[in-house]
Length: 505
Image (cartoon, rainbow, N blue to C red):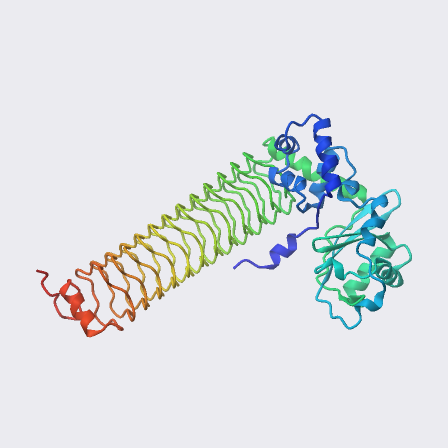
């Protein structure tokens, strides 16, 4: 499956607007003549969902937060609630009496440095440090500040403490901050006031001017894409997160390793684009055209791909867990070894798709079209395949334990040696299916059509065959059936070994 480090690699610091900040921003929208947040988002080429989160006190990426504030002609620090006049009140709320209050307590919080930004006028660096845990367990900020100063220099100053994952905004000179970073990276500084230091991750060490230029470059590129000026270009490693690229033409573009997290690509043309190892978590790709796109090892967890055209796309080893692929066209797509756990594939077209060794556990495939698809060795445990069309599909050695296949069309499908234990196959069409040596223990086959099916060597212990159509079905060598059940099945036209079926009166 997809390398889990991919998500960590792309993770960035997020920030939340204060209640007072949102109030100021709402007034700024009106003052600047924006009649709606949607229109503001569209005019700034920002994903609508990102702007919505900003105004709903939800965390968004720092660069997007700054862009929103800049376009509204606001100070981002003030909107975030970390201005000088508010910091004392913020810190006092989190104050503890002294360092001894933590003695005897083993904190489970981890301390993570996430990002640095430099304040150009004074050449100080602002570091956001995140502690995972209860904000009430943070000791007196002055004690933490003195510890940090002792290690790295007298310019260190804690400006603010915010809720969520606990964020300490720490300011200091470039020299002192770099010394602090070096101590943590070298392992010399492993704990701060009892909090273990680990998962160190710095995403920006540029000056405010450099950072501003980098942000300007990002949004300039977004503008170029929106004006259809990038077809066929190489945009490898580009940051396009939170951008509104709906209906953009990105056909034949090299987008490998690009960050498109939370971007809006609805209706975009990404045909033949290279999106290998791209980060598309939470991205809106509804109605996007991705035919023949290369998405191997891409991270698409929670992405919206409903009604997208992914025909012939290469999604091998891609992470599509919890993605919405409802009504998507995945015909002839390569999804081998892809993670589709808990994905929504209802009404999707997966005809002739390659899903060998894919993980589809808990996926919703109800009414999906999987005719001639290759699902050999795929994990479909607990998947919902009710009313799905799996005719002629290859499901050999697939894991379908506890899967819902009620009323599914599995006619002429290859289910040899598949695990169907406890699966619901009620009223499924299994005519002429190959179920040889399949595990059907305790499976529900009531009302299923098994006419002409091959169940030789199958495990049928505890299986429910009431009302099943078994005319000319082969049961030779099957195990788990009582003599009475065997005789009843023979009377209904089943074939056991070399014995001819009992004539049906």
